[in-house]
Image (tube, rainbow, N blue to C red):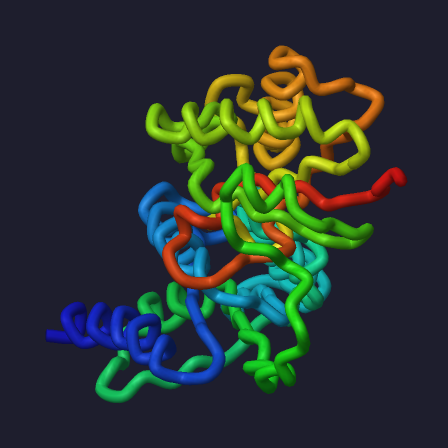
Length: 281
């Protein structure tokens, strides 16, 4: 009965926290250890996977020990446990800039209703607490006259353009995790290239974007294993235009990571745009 109660309390603590403003999770360690046991590491990785769509403000990591050992030893061990968890976060696409607190708190005294087994209580003290604070929703900005031209047509490029105009290639979609476009996008890309060859008076930057990463991080290119997918997508379009005859002197390419999500279906964030940088007379 006691075992069941302890398990329920641990599980409930993680699940209940998701209904709160702060997201909380706890992991537990073996005696005198700061390396996470495999089962606890799997639980932590599952928790990290739920943060994909969370706009994180800060992450705090606090390490604790049981009451065995000297105070100085416990303080050091609790800090080592906190540092170990930070390392796991950093290795799983969570920016170090978001982790604002990594503190060892030493030993604690934990009280559990109907639990009298001292060994179990000590086991629940050997832990790290993780607190994820999401950003507060920003007020919706006042709509201004848009500079983004959202029609993916060659006629748009033929029209009047000025420096600062941005043309979103809405129908140029990329394969998830790759810098190559989908089969249905190739004809549209070819049509755009033909117009750009003729429109010799404009200079532009090709901007690549990704979806589904922590808000400003780039994604991994599955072909090269490098974390530069937005740049790779921009370079792919740059090379394609050059192959079709667009002068390289008129173009540059740039990876924008996931700094400017469009909202809505994530597939539209796997995109490229061109930003007009110069219009000749």
